[in-house]
Image (cartoon, rainbow, N blue to C red; front, top):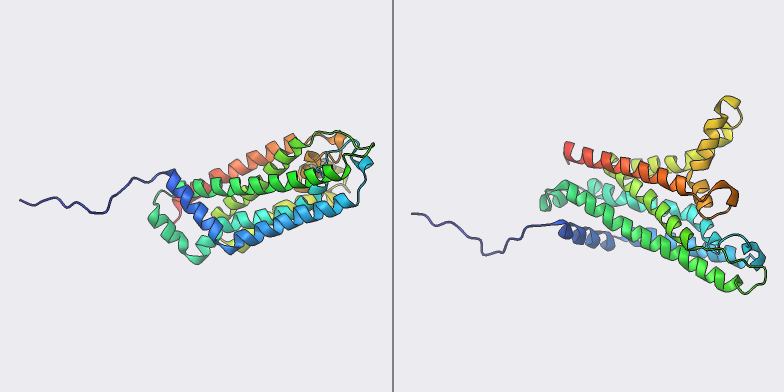
Length: 263
């Protein structure tokens, strides 16, 4: 009669918490995270405070104090896009994704953990930087008689959410393409082409309507609406909803391809 073997090593069933802990350890351990987030903070806060120093209290009579952060975000969003791509594509490039999937065969759990960890980090960093610029700008100018009292908390949340979703979209694209340079190029095209192309589409009457829509929903103008640079053109909610829909569609595509392809 044979006795069943019992391993002396305790075996625990893994769960999403383990995947989150693993992804958190990975993302905080690589230099690319520190560099991209460091440059992002430098751009948003540095440019924001430089712009704020050149303004006067009357400039904020009917706009929020977070306006200076907009100028840094236009450039800083590229940092979050780059980091979002690298969160997934770098593991495919080095071959470490095989080790990851061996340790956690549930691939959907790994991708879900990457999305959650990245989104939380991106949102906290971006919202905090916008808030800091707004708070310091308010401290500089709120004492002026011409300064208004426009609520700016919404711009912190929506501005942080918008650029964080761009990063998540980049993460999903990186997961689908599995190539860092290709995914970054695709995302830069997605951000830059709609900002440039309307200048040509508006020339012709037949393409004017397309150009106007593209102008309304490209990334720079969407952020401008969120920060109320033009109070007569909306508050950016429709642009934010469109980005949410596009990001969710990309995430669904990333999950679908994840299970169908070899690593």
